[in-house]
Amino acid sequence: MNKAAPPLKEIGPTFADCVENIRKKHGNNYQIVDKRTEEISGLFGIGKKRQMVVTYIVTDYSALQQGFREPSRSGNGVYGQPSGFSEERDKILVDLMKKKSNSENTQKEFSEISQKLELLQKRMEDLIPQQSQSIPSIKKIEEILEQNEFSSSYINYVVEKIRSEFSLEELEDFNLVQNKVIEWIGENITLFNQSELSKKPLVLILVGPTGVGKTTTVAKMAAKYRVDGKDSFIRMVSIDCFRIAAQEQLSIYGGHMDIPTTAAETAEDIERILQMDGNRLDVMLIDTIGLSPHDFEAIGKMRKILDINGLKPEVFLAVSASTKASDLRDIMDNYEIFGYKSVIITKFDETRHIGNVLSVLREKNKSVAFISLGQVVPRDFETASVLRFLMQLSDFKIDRKSLETKFSPLPGDAISKRVDTSDGGTL
Image (cartoon, rainbow, N blue to C red; front, side, top):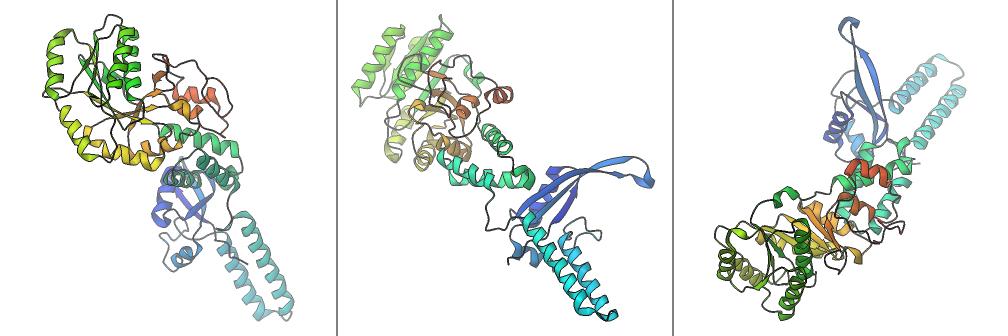
């Protein structure tokens, strides 16, 4: 029979303080069993104060046994000293030794006490899952996160957070756990501060690898500014001199929206365009060459083209929602040379799993500014929102009203079209 780890207690002013102290002692090798608030009397019995009592076990039992050789931090059993199982066991053994010396019926009493020990052991094993056993709610959360293509590091982060913040009793309520996990996912999504786009003239540069739809995205952004400011002077610039089709495509979009479009090949070309437009320019959007994230020489050359004296553009990295996590890491790392602050997620409508994107955004500490959900200009483009990402999660039960209260509804420019969601609904 495997030995169950004895429960320990940690007392502190708040739950967070208790968890912090537990982590200092045991790292991540613990599981919270119970938490409760109790009142204690003040000095001389005057006044009362509240404190948090957290009961936990160490999941790496060998480490716990080793820790028992060290003296406890407190003589009253508050910090680190085992309670419950070990104390009751010791009392039974002491009782056994006393009765063994004082009673003639030692064999019978020994049998009774042995039964007590077995019952106590069984009670603890029923209460505390063995390390080899998985908790059903945690296992299910792991499976759902994997299905949504979250990275292993992101899944580990969520699992450790579940173990540290939920008691065993709470873990039996899967809806409680999944609702909290969805909130954690939302809290880890950083949105770009749109107020940074209020300066004039506003120069926006879109960079990214081939095939992510940069040209169409630039046209959508231009259309957004055309709708938001009908009297604004907007210009689109293409420096994709290798693809004539890209320049022609941008010119066609510009013609439909009454937005001038110009080609540029050097930094001097862009400077001349800026001087030509002068003070009337409100927004300039620059479409760049699609490059392999591993073509460092070409990336360096394009960086020089965009190095314009006195120009402080807002640079966005365009990435496809369907790109696997390992490739996203490479893309985001290798395009750092452009100093981009935020990303634009394209082809959002072409995948049902966005855990890959959310995982890497969290790893790289990058925000998301806009989402492109289709090919139609200007319709299929909107300001990024936490709710849009959460509604895209599959196999989770999404409480939209609750999430709207916590994270705000979809933005005013959100499109009214079908996007694959967990319930197949229309957002």
